[in-house]
Length: 289
Image 1 (cartoon, one colour):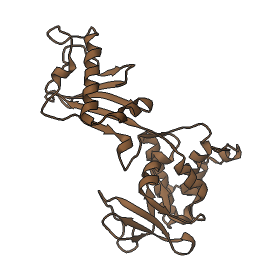
Image 2 (cartoon, helix red, strand yellow; image 1 turned 135 degrees about the vertical axis):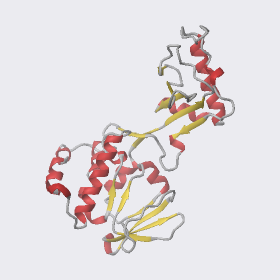
Image 3 (cartoon, helix red, strand yellow; image 1 turned 60 degrees about the vertical axis):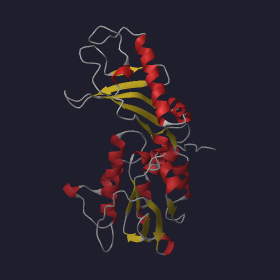
Image 4 (cartoon, one colour; image 1 turned 90 degrees about the vertical axis):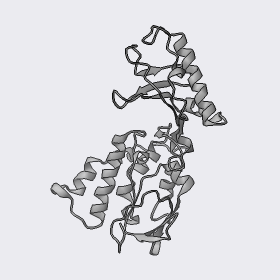
């Protein structure tokens, strides 16, 4: 929210710095993007994953505005990688063959999926969907093409030994159905600057750090910065916690800036309903303690 221009939405505009303004960080926030100089805003919602924030975004807030405890929690979050390898198909291989739409393997390709938008769509093959340790194996290839071909060879090996056949009663050879006119598509979440990882997972003894991020909007009202997204929830990698933290940010922005919540919702009732102070009372250990 901008003081003079109202609400603004920038698309494909990387944010480089968010800086506290005013004495002791109590004034409007200054946001600098790649193509625009610093502008002042009454509130800023931060949705980037914590690792991407650490690597690509300069957050400048005094300790009284954003505590060192919160900054430590952002830096110590545990993220995993994920890799997906896609092949466009020239025709379907599963019609009438009894081929499953999902295949789970104990090889490096991990999981396999097939998808078609409608009956006229030749379909797409997700030849490998991996995460965590298996996804780390995918980072060692010199190129995406070499990685994709390795996945395709492994799939051919798997189905040559299977009992699944095509409509001509021959063993299915997946590579015969791949459209050679199109390059395979490889998505490495760890290599995406705006993500730097796939999902936040638990790490032993980081309950307190997770709680610091979850309660930030409630505990740091004066700094005008708000957290939203699954990176700041307790359940990483899912839409539901991302939606809940987004609603949490919106409710606190409305309340903190003098607005009135609809349907008679009281911010006090909401905060009591979502209270997690009992976790603080448990004296949970922090990493390194």
